Image (cartoon, rainbow, N blue to C red):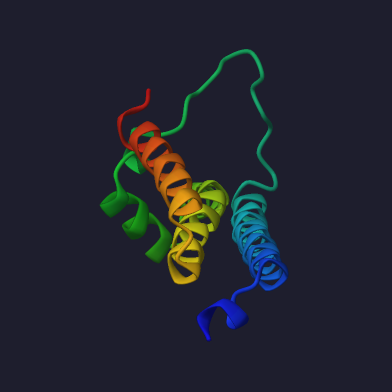
Length: 126
């Protein structure tokens, strides 16, 4: 019964929808952040002689959420970028679940290995 529901074609379609939804959602959040940023800094000139790295206030998720709740444009843009990064990770999570449902041990193991490498690099990578 489960094999009929999750054949290869349906699984590919679901993964395609997931990827498109993630990219559209991330793009929408980034565009909203850009609109807030342009609204706040429309009449300021840009100093290209010096590089200013991202503010350290956005380095932690609590500060990021707080910045979003206060309409901080940089925080909104950063959340959009994080959503864009999370989209392919969500695709791999979906693949693990789908292969588990199909009871395909080989592809479940391969997908779980890919997911482990992705999560390790996201958490411990520099």
